[in-house]
Length: 565
Image (cartoon, rainbow, N blue to C red; front, side):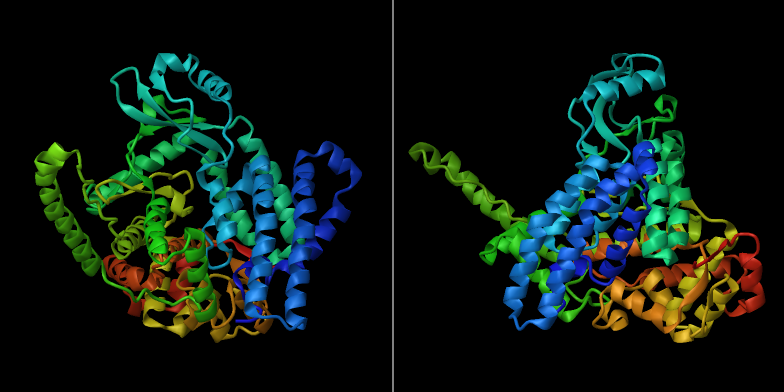
């Protein structure tokens, strides 16, 4: 499809605003600020490089629009740009760290927006940020506990298991009882960088996209909580208890058990769970499929991405069911067992005598993506709508696929808590989405403080569906996400929005991105609508009883209305 190729989408829809904002930022960065303000210096370092990159992409987009070129020629040019810039931009994000790394992590899951080349580079920010030296980690532990690490840990692995935006995780063994643990240690300057970065990022968005400031404000309040690891330990205990109460754990998911007595503000000690990152396991099987087609993994993923670009993102997964895939897995395992029995007989008899032993069979089992996605959707719908305590930062790097196919939920630093009113409002929202009740969505938005120029019901419905439910082609049409939102804003510009459910929307979007990464697109209300209806009935406020007056009561005192200025 001419004009809408994978690499192009990286800056499309927002590139013009970004280019203008870079110019404005450069003008605003006065010499005094640059000399004395670390946040300004870091921002100039980043945007000073990204500005020309954005311009280059825009020039290529202009060229493709006005010159006669084949799709193959356009694709080759986009890939060349991606290879030229992706690694360099991510290297800058790695070196700056702080909130810039955090936003890079968010972008790493946007497989419908970024090309394979960009995704591969951005995924390094999930847990492969350049780690701090061991001496820095040991000094932090000493400062936090008042004693050397060797007094707490009989063994402490030098190389971290992972390193991300505000800290890194090491494997260790407790001296007290020999337990294997994961030790998360915060970077010394993490909190300071967060605060300075948020100020400069908000200044950037004031120029580029002022309508996003209310989202940034809520994210800022939530991310501030991540810097006290004692709170994260409490989150792990609460979420773990909730998962056991609802029957998810230990059957389907596992939440690592923290050690509160060993945890401090900047050091978290928790149970070490076996497993690998969810997407790593899926990509290993993708490599098998690619080889069968004579392609590299990158070529195979790019072909899938081009198909999505041409056909759009389906609203719902329409492939083999979880039961069908499980049957295939069992048949493959049985075939391997039967074949290996014959191979064993050969190897201990003729093969052993002749020195011609054969290698045992081991089929690559397809991951059961439908089952994984079903588990994740039920778990997070329950956390949001039943418990009102959920992980707002559900990127794929926060899930481990354990050897027994259970899912480990490993990071609850960004845990959001909803009031009862907020939780029930979220329930009503997802019940309305499930029922396709546009009038209810309009009334809920208005009662929450939403104000737009025309109060168009169709625009409000589409914005709500995009923000909380789906990113499928049936909603977006031929537009990508940025173009879709920009179009709706042009149709009915909004002036005030409520921020009480921003992180519920954020979590919903992140779960949909995980679904796309698993090649299993989802509509959230398919899972969460029924949960919501049950909770409304249990609370004594069934769906049919909701009126504009009840909506206003639910929003009383819990909604902050933010002007779009």
